[in-house]
Length: 253
Image (cartoon, rainbow, N blue to C red):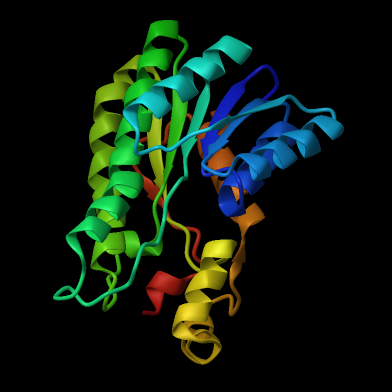
């Protein structure tokens, strides 16, 4: 990834942070974006202390203006955009459909779905203008295939990413821009810890973890490696598809 530039949303923690660190270790200059500025600045400092190149920009991906500024910042800092990883997401409130507030439905969809749409819109414009191709990786979930009670807002956004990714791939692949979707399973991230707190350790340890073939939660670094593969030349013939690094979870449930 030497001399390449990567833009990563939701980079303040978890999978996004691990991806930024991995891309940097492979020689890419990285732009990290999220809503939490202090965490971004800490990440930039860590990368720079290891000899890497990184820049941060506070971004709300549900805001078209913010997303446009994020891509413009990337081009201003490094002059190009080769890889984009659209990872920003929220789990939202889990609620029975009869009690789910319309405002919460809108909030989750604005970030998880509209946010990916806005990011790809502006990322693709930059890549098309440069005429150098590129790779975009969207981050879904095993809930892109699996529903669960009270999860209608979150699950519907993740399901929609399959159609969004495959459609945009069909548009951009002829221009040398590959678009793929990664659907992680149970990964040990801050979001995972929040969900564990909601459903309880017993549910996770007695039911969820045993359903994973590998009998453990994944690590953010493992998902970052999947993302890096899809951006790399080793995946030059892969576009419009979904990779599911879940330790075998969806084969059991």
